Image (cartoon, rainbow, N blue to C red; front, side, top):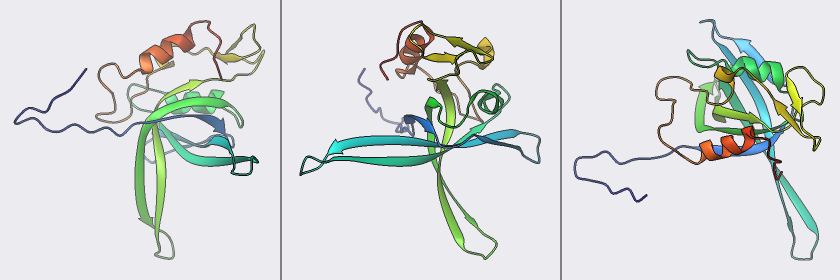
Length: 179
């Protein structure tokens, strides 16, 4: 579909990140002073290529992911319960840059992925809450209300079809994943 700007309309922009990777450590979950829960975890994505001399090279990027509970989602609680170091996950969210002053009054910067959607791509065979597939891969079975779309804060919900629904539907079926 071609979108055309019309006179008087606000231009549209998109801040969307989609990652598939492995957790570098168990998630850390804490409660804020307002009794909200937030989970953080590091996600590794890797790429490999052949160098000029034919030698195999690999680079791993680390992403700091932040997951909040909200009025409509308990995604941070799900992360705490089901995710462990090494698990492969699909995350979708937006990139955020923050800065703050540390104890020595130095300005610090961080880049975070504010996760709104998460799909577990690996599981524990025989573990609580997991359904083992015949291929040896497994994925989490969660209550339907907590399963897929997590919305955090005002304006967190994305409208319309962005391709994720087709991906989600293919994962929820009993299809084997290509990765």
